[in-house]
Length: 285
Ligand SMILES: NC(=O)c1ccc[n+]([C@@H]2O[C@H](COP(=O)([O-])OP(=O)(O)OC[C@H]3O[C@@H](n4cnc5c(N)ncnc54)[C@H](OP(=O)(O)O)[C@@H]3O)[C@@H](O)[C@H]2O)c1
Image 1: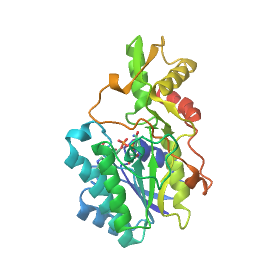
Image 2 (image 1 turned 90 degrees about the vertical axis):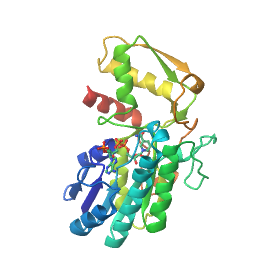
Image 3 (image 1 turned 90 degrees about the horizontal axis):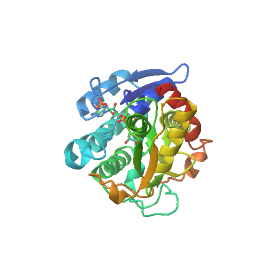
Image 4 (image 1 turned 120 degrees about the vertical axis):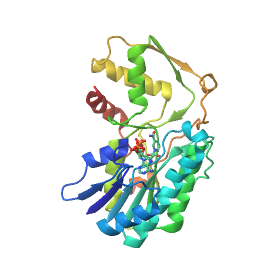
């Protein structure tokens, strides 16, 4: 299997490379070596390498910054995936693209299924939804995996932010009225590898953690894990606050749990995020 990976330096990109099955050959690219917004470069790279599989782990993920940088977010989250999908279609390669729970508005009270109506609340979610639509328009055989609340030992993410803040402060005030499922990036990588081997598996899939929490509850578990691993000299008090007490540029869905029933057909279990948290935090330490 020859795999072309984009966004190789991101959380998912790094975890994917760590889990590459034996015998797979990879061309791991980052912004410098393959800017996915450059259609000619994407076409040339795919034509030269002739991959069997293209995995797009590249994205504009700065949710709040996207509100004032909409053109750039659209270029990376919508035009880039379209470029890759078109090149994959020409090369007859499988294409796996990653999307987000932020395509939903969070008004549901039951886990979102793949066919639920989308309604992004901000620029990031809207550009990711445009990317999904572009991919399916130009190459309907593509696989799109929507995931949520991604953390890993790599890059910047909520777990690392909480560890940093916990080392600096006596008290943390964390949003307690937004609920979702944390997802370990290594488990997303494994799901991609499994799904890429299935035929036909095209379409949209949801994949996230196996247990729903609020950001405050997630923080409690991160700090409990930090205590078990002896990572902090002292633990801060964690106070739950409402979204209205933590204004951000982008509005976020209040509820974004994704149903993982469809992807389970392929034997792919939801991310055991609490189990992954221990090993991930040991690596961060
Ligand atoms: N993080 C989350 O909580 C979350 C939640 C739901 C869904 N997702 C989705 O999951 C996927 C993986 O996210 P992640 O957390 O691994 O993201 P990440 O850590 O932010 O990595 C994204 C990578 O994309 C690269 N990139 C940006 N613009 C590019 C371009 N024009 N060409 C090529 N590469 C480019 C970035 O490189 P530079 O740093 O060099 O710009 C970065 O290495 C994304 O599709 C994201 O939308 C993430």
